[in-house]
Image (tube, rainbow, N blue to C red; front, side):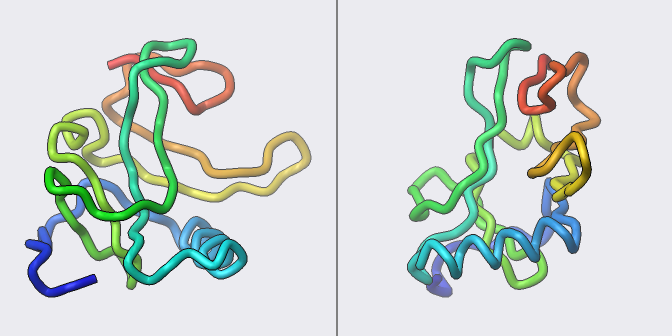
Amino acid sequence: MTETMNMVSTTPVTLTEGALKQLKRLRSEMNVPEDHGLRVGVKAGGCSGFSYELGFDLRKEQDEVYEISGMTVLMQKEHGLYLLGMEIDWVEGLDNRGFTFSNPNAKDTCGCGTSFSA
């Protein structure tokens, strides 16, 4: 990513060590180009009103850019309202395997953990 991206120093979300490990593994396995960052966001939908977005993408003009433990994170500014303070983790257990979202702004979440209301 280039120097002209207007990096923001305070990150609205955190990535646990487990999440970072899995994201780096996925980036490598999927041969994601270096100019793609990790997009974190929300979209309308899901059983509680909003669902989380997590995936690799090119930077868009309206994005804010963060650096979290060597990972470039892209987020639209207006999504920060819904995601401020959220922790993204990776869990691997008997009943659940995948990314989890611990969001202090969620008033209600669904059983699957990928949908919330604000």
